[in-house]
Structures are given as structure tokens and as C-alpha cells.
Amino acid sequence: MEKSRGYIPVAEKPDGSRPLWICEGWATACTLQTLRPLVCVIAGLDAGNLQAVATEARRRWPALDLVVCPDFDSVGQRKAREAAERARAKILPPPPVILPGCTDWNDVIAARRQGLTHA
Image 1 (cartoon, helix red, strand yellow):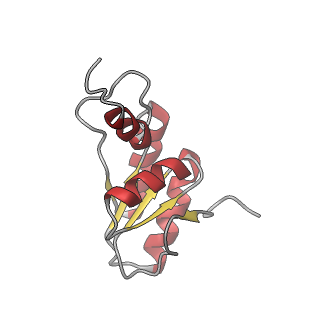
Image 2 (tube, rainbow, N blue to C red):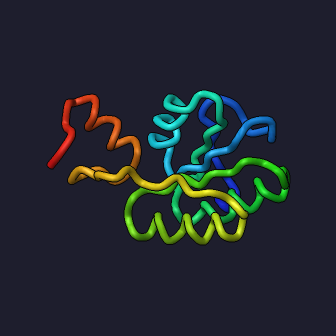
């Protein structure tokens, strides 16, 4: 299977009827789907594939509300900006405070569940 433009849907396959959020990894996609059940969330497999997935989604659904949800590292942020620019999408910003060891939204929610709120 070719990875480019490949993705893994969390709940439903995207069909253009709901906003589409594209994450890098599966755990983050699952977390965001739980937090935002009215959107369709997919895992784009890694930061390097965000642009291919986002531009393909934009090609299929030109008017779709499209959001790229990167990890918090510099590579994820850079790749998300590139993907959002090419696909005319929004970017989900990181939380205002990122605890040590938190690299994505899944880590942030897991830390909150454990009662960790600051460094």
C-alpha cells in the first residue's frame, strides 16, 4: 500500500459531510475524535503525509471545513503549516501550556486525566 495520501479513519470514513480534522498519528486522532464527535477525524500516518492527505481532501471537497492537527514538535508544526497553506486549511494550535513530555493532544489529555496541570 502506498502511504502518500493514505490515512486511517477513526470513526467514519470522510465523505465531505462533516468538518475534517487531519492528525499525524492514530492516538491523537482518537483523542480528538472523542473531544469533537461532530467532526470526522483521520490519522494521516505522519507529519510528512499531512500535505498529501490535506490536498487530496481539498481536491475532493472544495468547500470542506478542513483542519490540520499537528504534533507539537517543530517538524510537525512546519509540515502542518505547509499542508494548511497548500490545502487552504486551518491549523489546530497547540494548547497555551504544554507540559514536559507532552508531544501531542493525546499526551495533553492523558496528563490532564492524571491530574497533571503544570510543570
